[in-house]
Amino acid sequence: MIKVLVKNIEWDADEVDAVNLPKKMKLNIDEAELDNPDDDDELSDYISDRISDDTGWCHNGFEFYRI
Picture 1: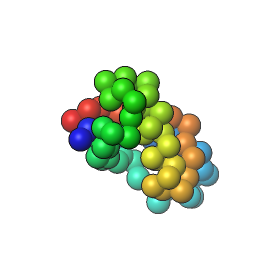
Picture 2: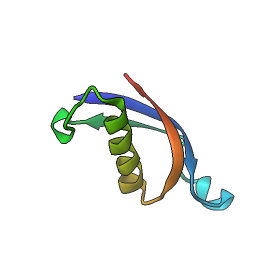
Picture 3: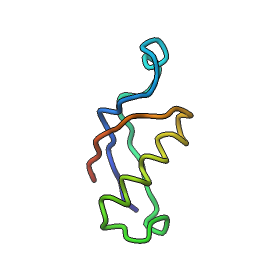
C-alpha cells in the first residue's frame, strides 16, 4: 500500500465552487494499480486521475508526498 498526502491542489473551478473543494487529500493506493510503484511520474498520473474521480472536479496541478 502506498500512502500519499496530496496538497496545494489548484482547482479548475471558480472561487465560489473551489471553497467547498478539499485543500489536501490523503490517498491509499494499492501498488497493484501501478505498473511501477517506484515511478513518481506514473504515481503522479494515477493521483491526478484519483483527484478528479474522487471529487468530480478537474484540477490544474498539485503536490504530493509519500507518507
